Length: 326
Image 1 (cartoon, helix red, strand yellow):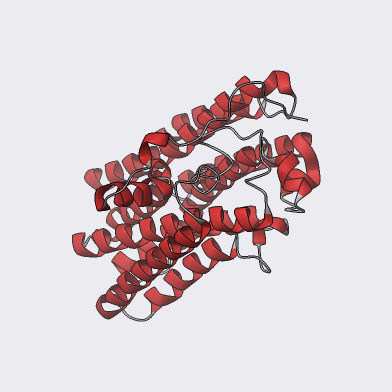
Image 2 (cartoon, rainbow, N blue to C red):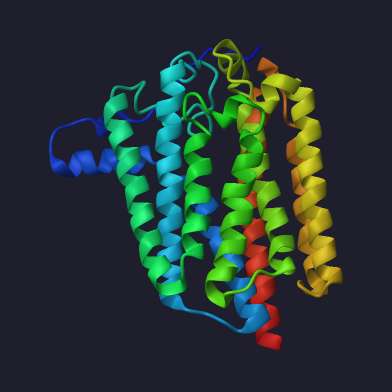
């Protein structure tokens, strides 16, 4: 069982205070903006593939897609806090590693009430849907399917009753919502075509996104178990989390290799793919629920976030370099 003998990390009390500017700042930080790269980079990967494969690029479509995806991610983050507070997961979580696990802690710190967070999530979701309508007017109703699917998975992940996170499929939902859908959707948005190579390129991104969720579930396993939030880590334990993480690493590497063989990626991408896999294996060894491994677990969480970021950037550079050569 994880234990901590130091004060709980939480948002700074300086965020409290009257005034519209202070309220806006609280609302913005409650969305956990530091993690928006997980929403932005997959869209850029899909757009890079559209540029590399068919030389198609529309800056307006990209800007709208990025804004919509960020709003979807923000709404999902905020509603995740609401859902976990409703079932008592975050309030009961004394082992979280802030700011990576245990939510934003805004509700627990009294900076925003659950009702205020609910309204914030609703407003962000409405904004995402509004941008989806604009995109559908520009590119057709198919945009709505991508948008509703992504937003639906993000909200159903935490929605009491559905709560995909408690059913052992939340990890797959995140992989789809923050991997397959934005990569394939961004490619389709630019080209109007569904492409197997775009699906292939989405697999490493999906695997890296799922790996972030899996390793972030490890510090929260005790509180999740107490409130019957049966994540894969609750079901399989820390040892099982290592196996899942290893499988995701293998999927990312295998998909990259196949993409290289199909000439969707240049041969030189084999080097960063192998380095990323090695870093993931290093992070895997730090997955532990033992108190003595807490510091190393935090380092592994950070390595996982870096793997996602660097991996997506490497894909983008590889694809755009191929476009430049052609």
